[in-house]
Amino acid sequence: MLGFWVIENETKARIYYDDSVSPSSWTLTLQALTSFECLISNQPANVYTVTESFNMSQQQLQNAMDKYIARSSNSPTNISTSAKVVSVHDGDTCDLVISRNGGLQKFKCRLAAIDTPELKTGRKAEKARDFLAWLSTGGDPASFSSSSQPWFEGELQNMLDANKMLVHAEFQSTDIYGRALVVLKKTSQNKHSFNDLLMQYGYAKPYKK
Image 1 (cartoon, rainbow, N blue to C red):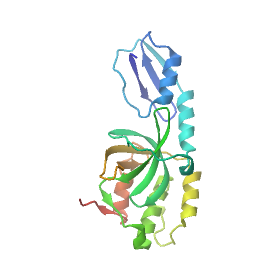
Image 2: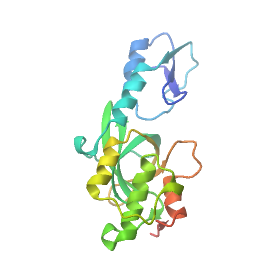
Image 3: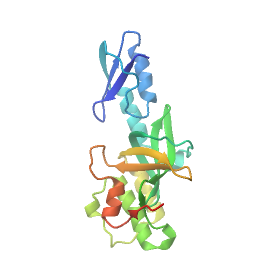
Image 4: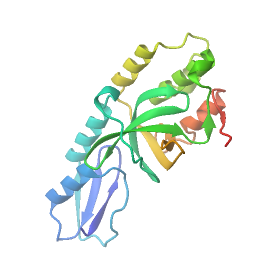
Protein backbone atom coordinates (compact mmCIF):
# COMPACT_ATOMS: atom_id res chain seq x y z
CA MET A 1 0.00 0.00 0.00
CA LEU A 2 1.24 3.46 -0.82
CA GLY A 3 0.40 5.79 1.99
CA PHE A 4 0.54 6.41 5.70
CA TRP A 5 -1.63 7.58 8.54
CA VAL A 6 -1.17 9.78 11.59
CA ILE A 7 -3.18 10.23 14.75
CA GLU A 8 -4.45 13.76 15.24
CA ASN A 9 -5.94 13.20 18.70
CA GLU A 10 -7.46 10.44 20.83
CA THR A 11 -10.51 10.03 18.57
CA LYS A 12 -9.44 10.92 15.07
CA ALA A 13 -6.98 9.49 12.59
CA ARG A 14 -6.13 11.17 9.31
CA ILE A 15 -5.39 8.77 6.47
CA TYR A 16 -3.14 9.66 3.53
CA TYR A 17 -3.05 7.43 0.47
CA ASP A 18 -2.87 7.55 -3.29
CA ASP A 19 -5.56 6.64 -5.80
CA SER A 20 -4.65 2.94 -5.81
CA VAL A 21 -6.05 2.33 -2.31
CA SER A 22 -9.74 2.58 -1.46
CA PRO A 23 -11.10 4.14 1.77
CA SER A 24 -12.52 0.77 2.86
CA SER A 25 -9.06 -0.82 2.62
CA TRP A 26 -7.66 1.82 4.89
CA THR A 27 -10.51 1.35 7.37
CA LEU A 28 -9.52 -2.32 7.75
CA THR A 29 -5.88 -1.34 8.14
CA LEU A 30 -6.75 1.17 10.84
CA GLN A 31 -8.52 -1.50 12.89
CA ALA A 32 -5.45 -3.74 12.74
CA LEU A 33 -2.69 -1.23 13.47
CA THR A 34 -1.19 -1.31 16.94
CA SER A 35 0.93 1.84 17.16
CA PHE A 36 0.73 5.30 15.75
CA GLU A 37 3.50 5.21 13.21
CA CYS A 38 4.27 6.05 9.62
CA LEU A 39 3.81 2.98 7.45
CA ILE A 40 5.11 4.02 4.04
CA SER A 41 6.11 7.60 3.32
CA ASN A 42 4.49 8.81 0.11
CA GLN A 43 3.40 12.16 -1.24
CA PRO A 44 -0.34 12.16 -0.49
CA ALA A 45 -2.74 12.62 -3.37
CA ASN A 46 -5.98 12.52 -1.39
CA VAL A 47 -6.80 12.97 2.29
CA TYR A 48 -9.61 11.28 4.18
CA THR A 49 -10.56 11.43 7.86
CA VAL A 50 -11.70 8.19 9.48
CA THR A 51 -13.05 8.07 13.03
CA GLU A 52 -15.45 5.16 13.42
CA SER A 53 -13.00 2.25 13.25
CA PHE A 54 -10.50 3.92 15.56
CA ASN A 55 -13.22 4.68 18.12
CA MET A 56 -14.34 1.03 18.00
CA SER A 57 -10.82 -0.24 18.69
CA GLN A 58 -10.39 2.31 21.48
CA GLN A 59 -13.61 1.23 23.18
CA GLN A 60 -12.64 -2.45 23.04
CA LEU A 61 -9.34 -1.63 24.70
CA GLN A 62 -11.00 0.45 27.41
CA ASN A 63 -13.32 -2.45 28.24
CA ALA A 64 -10.54 -5.08 28.40
CA MET A 65 -10.41 -7.20 31.56
CA ASP A 66 -7.60 -9.41 32.81
CA LYS A 67 -9.69 -12.58 33.20
CA TYR A 68 -10.91 -12.57 29.59
CA ILE A 69 -7.57 -12.27 27.79
CA ALA A 70 -4.83 -14.88 27.81
CA ARG A 71 -1.28 -13.66 28.25
CA SER A 72 0.74 -13.58 25.03
CA SER A 73 4.41 -14.26 24.49
CA ASN A 74 6.59 -12.45 21.96
CA SER A 75 6.33 -9.07 23.63
CA PRO A 76 6.58 -6.03 21.36
CA THR A 77 9.71 -3.90 21.49
CA ASN A 78 10.54 -0.35 20.50
CA ILE A 79 6.98 0.85 20.07
CA SER A 80 4.78 3.40 21.84
CA THR A 81 1.04 2.86 22.02
CA SER A 82 -2.08 3.19 24.14
CA ALA A 83 -2.54 0.41 26.68
CA LYS A 84 -4.77 -0.63 29.55
CA VAL A 85 -3.33 -1.83 32.84
CA VAL A 86 -5.49 -4.88 33.61
CA SER A 87 -3.61 -6.30 36.60
CA VAL A 88 -0.90 -5.16 39.00
CA HIS A 89 1.31 -7.77 40.62
CA ASP A 90 3.55 -5.47 42.63
CA GLY A 91 4.95 -1.97 42.37
CA ASP A 92 7.02 -2.63 39.26
CA THR A 93 5.17 -5.49 37.52
CA CYS A 94 1.83 -5.40 35.75
CA ASP A 95 -0.10 -6.82 32.81
CA LEU A 96 -0.84 -4.51 29.88
CA VAL A 97 -3.35 -5.03 27.10
CA ILE A 98 -2.76 -3.39 23.73
CA SER A 99 -4.40 -3.54 20.32
CA ARG A 100 -2.14 -5.63 18.09
CA ASN A 101 -2.48 -7.68 14.91
CA GLY A 102 -6.18 -7.02 14.64
CA GLY A 103 -7.08 -7.95 18.23
CA LEU A 104 -6.27 -7.41 21.90
CA GLN A 105 -3.12 -8.95 23.35
CA LYS A 106 -1.91 -9.06 26.95
CA PHE A 107 1.71 -8.97 28.09
CA LYS A 108 3.42 -9.25 31.44
CA CYS A 109 5.51 -6.11 31.84
CA ARG A 110 8.22 -4.79 34.13
CA LEU A 111 8.57 -1.06 34.67
CA ALA A 112 11.98 -0.15 33.29
CA ALA A 113 14.86 1.08 35.44
CA ILE A 114 13.12 0.82 38.84
CA ASP A 115 12.83 -1.77 41.58
CA THR A 116 10.15 -2.12 44.26
CA PRO A 117 9.94 -4.58 47.18
CA GLU A 118 8.49 -8.04 46.63
CA LEU A 119 4.95 -8.42 47.99
CA LYS A 120 6.02 -11.04 50.53
CA THR A 121 8.14 -8.42 52.29
CA GLY A 122 5.12 -6.66 53.74
CA ARG A 123 3.12 -3.45 53.84
CA LYS A 124 5.52 -1.15 51.94
CA ALA A 125 5.46 -3.52 48.99
CA GLU A 126 1.65 -3.64 49.05
CA LYS A 127 1.47 0.16 49.07
CA ALA A 128 3.86 0.32 46.11
CA ARG A 129 1.50 -2.04 44.25
CA ASP A 130 -1.50 0.08 45.21
CA PHE A 131 0.27 3.27 44.10
CA LEU A 132 0.89 1.82 40.64
CA ALA A 133 -2.77 0.76 40.40
CA TRP A 134 -3.81 4.24 41.58
CA LEU A 135 -1.76 5.92 38.86
CA SER A 136 -3.03 3.45 36.25
CA THR A 137 -6.64 4.41 36.94
CA GLY A 138 -6.04 8.15 36.72
CA GLY A 139 -5.34 8.91 40.38
CA ASP A 140 -3.43 12.04 41.37
CA PRO A 141 -0.15 10.88 42.94
CA ALA A 142 -0.30 13.65 45.55
CA SER A 143 -3.75 12.42 46.69
CA PHE A 144 -2.71 8.83 47.30
CA SER A 145 -2.90 7.90 50.98
CA SER A 146 0.33 6.27 52.13
CA SER A 147 -1.07 5.70 55.63
CA SER A 148 -4.25 3.81 54.75
CA GLN A 149 -4.48 0.04 54.81
CA PRO A 150 -3.44 -1.73 51.58
CA TRP A 151 -6.25 -2.82 49.30
CA PHE A 152 -7.38 -6.41 49.27
CA GLU A 153 -6.46 -8.18 46.03
CA GLY A 154 -10.11 -8.54 44.96
CA GLU A 155 -10.81 -4.90 45.70
CA LEU A 156 -7.81 -3.81 43.64
CA GLN A 157 -8.76 -6.06 40.72
CA ASN A 158 -12.34 -4.77 40.72
CA MET A 159 -11.00 -1.24 40.47
CA LEU A 160 -8.83 -2.16 37.49
CA ASP A 161 -11.71 -4.03 35.79
CA ALA A 162 -14.00 -1.01 36.12
CA ASN A 163 -11.37 1.44 34.94
CA LYS A 164 -11.73 2.87 31.42
CA MET A 165 -8.57 4.97 31.38
CA LEU A 166 -5.80 4.09 28.95
CA VAL A 167 -2.16 4.87 29.57
CA HIS A 168 0.70 5.67 27.23
CA ALA A 169 3.10 2.72 27.12
CA GLU A 170 6.61 2.85 25.73
CA PHE A 171 7.79 -0.70 25.10
CA GLN A 172 11.59 -0.87 25.13
CA SER A 173 13.19 -4.33 25.21
CA THR A 174 12.58 -7.52 27.21
CA ASP A 175 14.28 -8.77 30.36
CA ILE A 176 15.84 -12.19 30.94
CA TYR A 177 12.41 -13.56 31.92
CA GLY A 178 10.79 -12.41 28.68
CA ARG A 179 8.85 -9.58 30.28
CA ALA A 180 8.47 -6.38 28.33
CA LEU A 181 10.38 -3.45 29.84
CA VAL A 182 8.09 -0.44 29.71
CA VAL A 183 7.78 3.20 30.65
CA LEU A 184 4.20 4.18 31.53
CA LYS A 185 2.70 7.65 31.43
CA LYS A 186 -0.78 9.05 31.86
CA THR A 187 -0.47 10.56 28.37
CA SER A 188 2.38 10.86 25.92
CA GLN A 189 2.67 14.55 26.81
CA ASN A 190 3.28 13.96 30.52
CA LYS A 191 6.78 14.89 31.66
CA HIS A 192 6.91 12.42 34.56
CA SER A 193 6.32 8.72 33.98
CA PHE A 194 4.81 6.30 36.49
CA ASN A 195 8.35 4.92 36.80
CA ASP A 196 9.55 8.38 37.89
CA LEU A 197 6.64 8.92 40.27
CA LEU A 198 7.19 5.60 42.05
CA MET A 199 10.73 6.73 42.85
CA GLN A 200 9.72 10.31 43.62
CA TYR A 201 7.17 9.19 46.22
CA GLY A 202 9.52 6.68 47.83
CA TYR A 203 7.97 3.43 46.59
CA ALA A 204 10.83 2.42 44.27
CA LYS A 205 14.59 2.65 43.89
CA PRO A 206 16.71 2.68 40.76
CA TYR A 207 17.16 -0.83 39.39
CA LYS A 208 20.63 -2.28 39.89
CA LYS A 209 21.72 -5.10 37.61
